[in-house]
Amino acid sequence: MDERGIGIFDSGVGGLTVLHRLLEAVPHEHLLYLGDTARHPYGTKSAAVVSRYAVENTAFLTEKGVKMVVVACNSASAVALEALRERFEVPVIGVIEPGARAAVAATHCRKVGVIGTEATIASGSYTRALHALDATLEIYTRACPLLVPLAEEGWVDNEVARQAVALYLASLRQSRIDALVLGCTHYPLLAKAIAAYMGPEVQLIDSAAETAREVAATLVKHGLARADGAGSASFFVTDVPDRFVKIGGRFLGTTVDSAVRIER
Ligand code: DGL
Image (tube, rainbow, N blue to C red; front, side, top):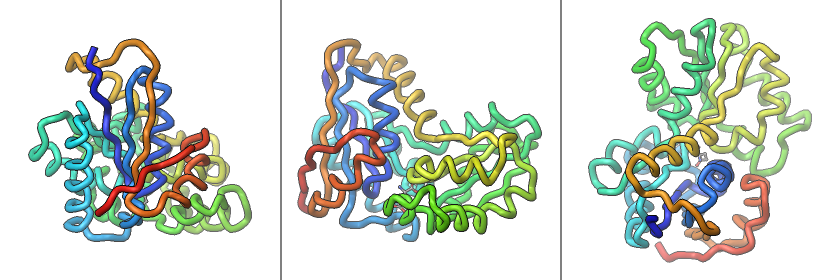
């Protein structure tokens, strides 16, 4: 039994969709979540800046003595994963590779769509990860930046959400893909509107669920699992916790009672 915790970070509340899946997949673990709310969003920032933030977040978590770090943010996974793996000794798991693997398993027509923030799409990370698994895939990508504030506002199933989804996804629907990677932590909240627009023949791939499965498998593989006893979740933020606590519940699927502000 390895009693050490698992560190998870994101730019804010979005990674709570990953934490939600981790609570199901590794219920005995102690989970330490850092939301870098003072510097949110990452998806509109440059790769160099997001990489610097990712290193600082990982340093905070490793100083807390965690045995593994989960980059629960597509934008940070897209640009910083290699740097983190080189710099830190603990296993570092991102959301891109698990999402890509699930998409390759799901597609029959070999046409896959990927949506994400500007940073994620511009990095080409999903395209590289998908092509590494199957070079014959046709890949169609689209940045959908407005879906992030819509999800935070709770506008996920109204006319504005439906129109935004239709405007962003029109070209992907025309491309006749049959798997669509929700390559942003916020998009699972809009899954209903996205599924309704894309139609039943398109399977939505939730990177969060796939990542949680990978974390569970990696813990076992490295002999790091905490196999029984009650797990826990604790929260750290880099700005005042009010908004994180207020809207976090919608992303986590259960209330966020409190979060500790850390100085940056
Ligand atoms: N968590 C980010 C992601 O998955 C979305 C929010 C942001 O732009 O920081 O890319």
